[in-house]
Length: 254
Image 1 (spheres, rainbow, N blue to C red):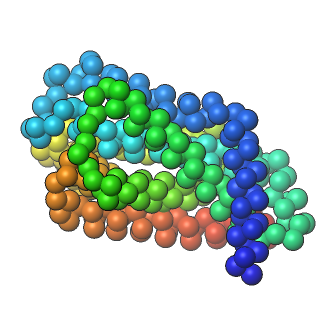
Image 2: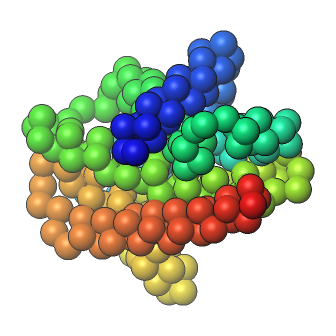
């Protein structure tokens, strides 16, 4: 049974990836906004921002930019899922001898692959802009693992949006608050520079702990408790979003 699910998921994932390869503009579009933000903050606003960390500003802000890249990319998962649902693809799949869960997992895995490519493009541009890190191979692997887990947790939220949306705009618009969230965190300025209530929110929302963990890994400094807080947030969101998506999906196909 497990091999049947894996083979079905693999076949459907190849289908989704083929669609992306035929229209790579989705990946390019996902990378454009974060790159534009890097250019804006580093070359226009960076000189007026004091982080107190001793890092160059591109080194300080890159972790937040990577999370914005992923938050932008998962909107396409919701969009593609909505189109499949409205186009009757789900009904066709139900008439075929395939594992039902493989339909959703194919979209999720496609999201992971597409976002990895987008993140790689953004990191490449950051290196051209002066980003430097002495991170070890282990630290890079840890960063990659965190970004993949972050992508999975947000993608399952995108699945819920794609299954629940009534319009194409509604399917993708849910990602806007997620894109905005890093701006009220430690991604671009220290939380200590914010007014009291805003600082409290910034310090206790998930993005700050994730950003602080990635920043420490890149800098080669101790991550402290941030990594455990970050993992707790991401795993918690993933579990709740996955459970919610499965419940809604079963109602849709029942």
